Length: 285
Image (tube, rainbow, N blue to C red):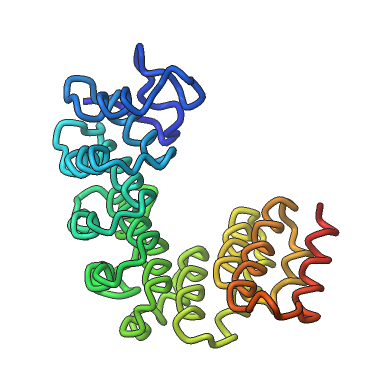
């Protein structure tokens, strides 16, 4: 059993493993470390490294799938650190053949494995994940409470709701709607984000704009990222005025710009709204 911190970059650095910036740490070494079973720390770090550097070789995917079922690496609280990193990595490799395994991981007893699996399923954008994600909303907002003695809710609702929005799970709209009133602001935002993606109703975009006025910086940051993710053009002025880091405001504005540019042909001229957006970005640089 190995204790792991939440900082993937620092965890699992045993002798000979190297670091993220160590040129001596190669794909071959990462694969070897992931495939062996004697050193859990080496496997944990290798799983992160393979995802970080997008090593999409069949051997790597096979080893990650095996790590996703690992029983040996357990945290003191009963979690599965290696499975978490394997689930995260699998979403970054763009291989949809791993979707069934990630769907199975939604049933893991470890909250963070479920969260990582939901996030990866969103990245892979495969509709097969929708039923499994919907199942995690069972009981609705009434059961979406804090787990006693834990720093998290019953399920990773943010990740679930965001994935359902990205996957265009229109059959989940009625299940998502109550979460706009959840007691955790970030869950409210995730629900509003998903519902805007599913309905294009501006009231959900405006709910996120309202979130830019929250007292807590972390919450305002969350609203910024959600607005960027949905490409809500009407939010650009509010984003520019938000009490948050310019770097994050630029990321949100860039997300909105890219969202609208992908819908335009190369021959179309930029309209006034997009020109205004780009000017706001320049002013934040």
